[in-house]
Length: 182
Image (cartoon, rainbow, N blue to C red; front, side, top):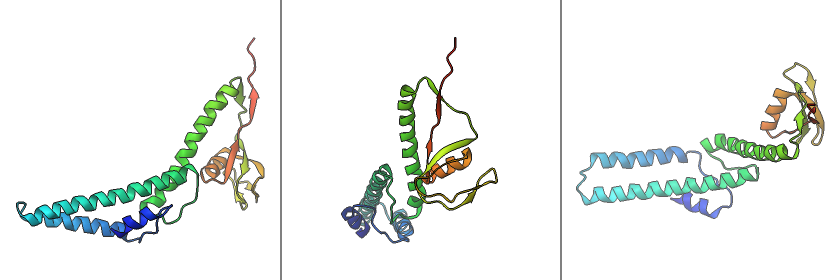
């Protein structure tokens, strides 16, 4: 398959025709149909089976290669072009999962470094904006913004979480020493 050859030669995901997924489904479906209706004992049938296995292997390799490229880009949080169908849905979730993993590691390290500290309870989260952001209405129906990259603001927790998942802000944890029990 030409798509497989092109994919191997590109650093990032190669530009594939949008109809490729449907073409693959039809092609493999057609081969399977031919096998079902043909005499299993003939040489032609055996050749078709080998051909089907080869096509299936190439398609698997094509998408395994693309998956590796998606994972590598997600680790570096790079924006990607040339994603097709389901990849457009999966890639942002993959980036989000890797961020969540890193946050957990950070919290683990933070737990050791700040084991005698606790978060200050609040309905608001302190955030640092990573991107310029236009004015918006928060869940508390108050107006926030506009913000420039690097601005720091206190936002309702739900808005802060959503903006962090979208890669617009980074939450700043506000801690205080735990009260000692005497």
